[in-house]
Length: 181
Image (cartoon, rainbow, N blue to C red; front, side):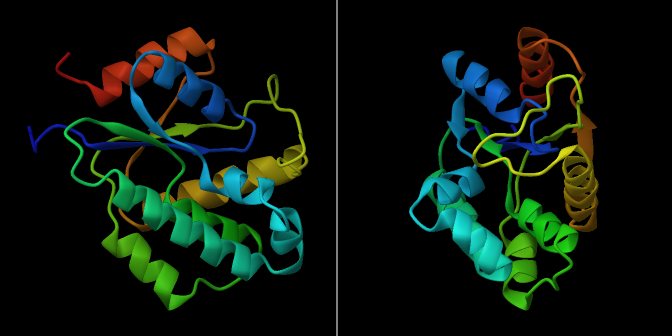
């Protein structure tokens, strides 16, 4: 295994900015992927009410799920592209006006991603709410700002994805995650 090659790429950014669509295209192209843990939690019974009634508990559940996904892909000889990561939990807490618990801060400092962090900026032309994406446009923009700041707080540099069709975004992503290819 080439330990100098990127092992983790992360898609982060605004809700509804095309991350899941890009992740699906990456998976179809044979790239190992990891789903967005928040969306998975929201789909479970009581997930939406947990987010609404106990945002700190929801953040703790997201952090735990991110760690499990990180562990699940540990030691893999190939790259994994994650749909969001631990610093996104901090962004969620920040945009919710909540303090970051020491355990979540520690997890962000301990469970590091070793590869590019690609940011999908807010993109009004494709934004749409759905049963799990409940933010309005202004909230989506605020969320993007909060998660971007959180990733930077933990020492990551973000690369903005271009606002282009998914095939072109996939080509851009491949060039960033496989720079020698």
